[in-house]
Figure 1: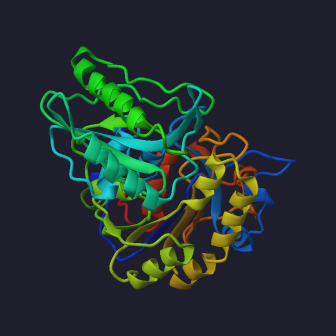
Figure 2: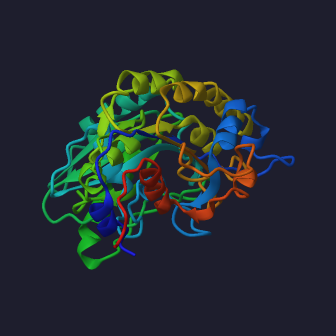
Length: 401
């Protein structure tokens, strides 16, 4: 069924408001019998489960581990198999990097390599100030390769944007990132014949980078992934759903994605309270709000089980501020799971609760993967989250006669 076609036919503008809170990487695996979510003190999230209707979601398919981009696209009602966006373009747009039609961009991680192996993919989560200094140093030392302009742009912590500017470039190259520690760095490989030149430029850049950073104690190498050019047309959310949507996210990738989808990106700082401050300040101005909470994912990726528990307990304290706004629809969920036990994204389903006066409710009394799996919504693909939100906000007309 073509959801986009149906959405254009059925959506109608209303004054009702939707709030979607995404706790990034929330799902986990049991350690000593309990997941991070089950281990946390979460009275307000449990209250959300009691007030709403619950289920668990799969971002793509059962068993498929998603990246953040496709996982979020699915939540917003876009088929992640149809719209495959490179991480680079999302990072670039979120960081404010101008991307021309002939440019190729990629997401970069400063990393630590020792004895030919990647020992830390994030260079100890390098300080953002150090990142800025390193990028300035690299831009001074490596300005072009074989007539193609090379630029790097600092992001948060260890992240940066890599950009090649010149004619004849292709995005069809593999990631130069082994994705796991304890493995040797990878070279970029052309996935199509026309990408051979671009792959060779990337590999030359990485070789030169390793030479100029060899004396750095932590950030002595870089990993590149998500090579991308400016994407083909994505139907914007205001056009597709007749919404006035706003994004409250601090990290560049999520700002970039939501900007591509036509959301108004509201500036917000790194502290959890600021998410809710910005929401309250602009609550009268929009009718769809996406709130992004990153700390759960960061702790999971680093294998910090207790810190992920603390992050859940931290945001739980702010849930009453959502009750006070009385949105017509409130959804609390995640884009994907990031179990601390795996130190990476995983295929495990995400807890999901939808709260609305029009939701029939169920018998779930706590917010966790195992409890939500027993909810009335059951297990479903994330792409159905958007139709559910729109329906409960009375923003969908009847289908057919």
